[in-house]
Length: 264
Image (cartoon, rainbow, N blue to C red; front, top):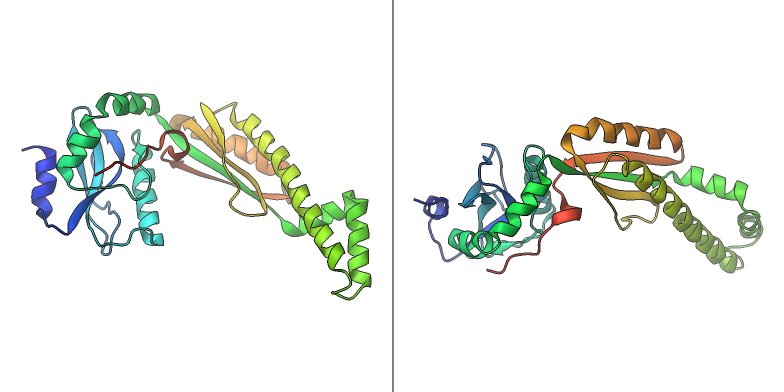
């Protein structure tokens, strides 16, 4: 009996159920007993194998509305947990196929060699993300110390009623936004240069908040995690009081090898 058959028999072929696919892993990867997937209640995670590769999957009701915070967290938690012990090729959130046979034939078999080669390149690597956010009070204090224009606008705002100072408020807001963008570019470049000394690849991500200072992903050998931590510690020390910096990972290599959702 194939692994695909085992998954189908475990739950039965209900017309109202489909197979959710999380990512691709080597065929010898085992699922942790306590691993759970998306759904309410959380679904049991299974493996569908095809040759040298396999897919992490679970059964899901076809009428389950994907996209809840719990589902997003379950998707990432499963992939990140697997990435800590094996190479993982993550699929984008929301990848659903008709059944396990479709996963084996249409996803794994059709892309077998491509997926296997990518997994071989990812062997021993994981993604780490460096995120930093400006301390607003420190940022504004520094801006007022550095910019005569900012001080003039502040003084004008403080000396006039709210309605009369509208133009100055808008000008100061634009000045702050432009300064954030310039400092973000400089701080991001500093982080990229530092991470390039320990990473195989570095990817600059879009900011997720107006006060973001750094948002950078790095593909790094898992055995070099201590080196990454040392780099981030140094960056954090240099930015102390100005930027709150943190390191996330290891996680699946979303920024480097995420595939499109399969059709099925």
